[in-house]
Each structure stands twice: as structure tokens, then as C-alpha cells.
Amino acid sequence: MTALLQHWQLKVAALAVATALWVFVTTSEKAEVVVAAPLEIDAVPPGVQVVGERPDSVDVQLHGLRAILGRLGPDQVRARVSLAGVRPGEVVLRVLPEQIVVPAGVTVLRVSPSRVRFVVEASRSSRLTVVPRLTGSLQDGYRVVGVSVTPADVQVEGPASQVNGLTEIATEPVNLSGATATIERMVALAAPAGSIRIVGERRVRVVVEVTGAGTRNGDSTGGRSTLPGRERT
Image (tube, rainbow, N blue to C red):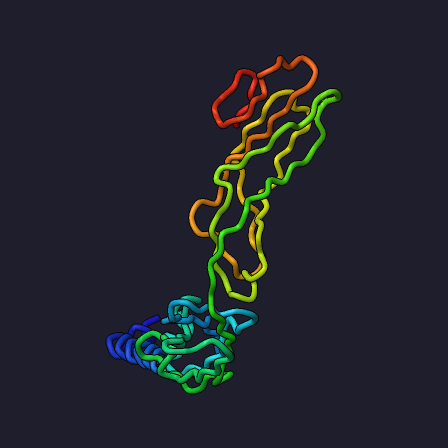
């Protein structure tokens, strides 16, 4: 025990120096890693859209301190390409190291693939007639005598090749099972196919006039006001 305590100050100092040296080596050691960087598109010109398949990410080889690379989060490395000034058609863009967003102290060595391909198409807007989708069966003796939709049409936008030829858009199903009176529902529009999007309100009011046994004349005259016996949601 006496031998261990001899010159203890020097031993503590040596331990401190060794610890500091270990910390210096581990924090200053350089390393390289390859990560997938999400691909972001900037500056898309008005009147055009990117269509079809496109890469979601590129592989990026990074160089830096091992401690920094080991703490990289999924949102700290991103690749950005600009479509400023492009015209409709096939576009091939280079992805340069300076287009990669990385934390301070990290260097981009290589990007793979170094070129990415996009197909750009002119966009178009159109108004489509809303068609309610009715499902289910009424009780025996009842029937549908009228269907109205408000608004009757909606505007959509998308690539011209997808919008051309479209005239209608359906609603989500309106279930009539067991109905014995006029039904009023607020329903969502069915999601358009492809890259088409709905401009503005995505819900419409559907009124289904039901008549049959026990319905007095004049109780199903239509319109959009609330009538006695109407089921609403």
C-alpha cells in the first residue's frame, strides 16, 4: 500500500495526461462514411410538373471527424437540385458536392449517381363534374327519386397527359342501406389518379331524395333545405 501511495501526484498527473491523449485521439480521428441523402427539388418553374419515376435519394461519401459522422441525423444531409429554367421534356441534371447540405466540418467526397433524370411536363387545369357514388340497398318499397351535389363540379390540376380526357370525378361511397327518408351527407372526393390534385375544397354535399311507403306527396320535392324526416350527418 505504501508503495502505491509513493509519488501519487506524479501518477495522477500521468493518468490525466493519458486520458487527455485518448480523448484527443478519439475526437480528432478522421473517417469516411456513405449515407443516403434525400433528393430535394427546388425552383420548379410555374406551369410545369415533374412526372413519372424519379430518384428519392443519392449516395453521398462524407469525410470528417469520426465523432461528428457518428452523430449525423437523418435530416442533416440533403441533396438539392434546381429546375429553374427547364422546359417540358426529359431533363438530366448533375448533382455536385456543393449541392449537398452537410453539417460544418464535414466534406463531401463523392455523389452517386452524379446525374439524375427527370421528366417535366406542362401542367393543365380543368373542371370536372362530381359524380356521387351510391352504395347499399334501400328498404323494400323505397326508391331514389333524385340526387344532387353541391358544388356540382370542382377544379383539378395536374400533368396535361393525365388531365386530358377527364370529365368526371367520383365521391367516396354514400351508403343508402336501410334509408327511408331523404339523406344529406358531406363526403370527400375520391383521390385522383397519378399526380392530379384537387384545387380548393375536397368535400361536397350530396343529397339523395328517397321516397316510398309512408312518404306523403310533397315530402321529397328536392332542393337543399332541411326537410322533415331528412337524415343528416
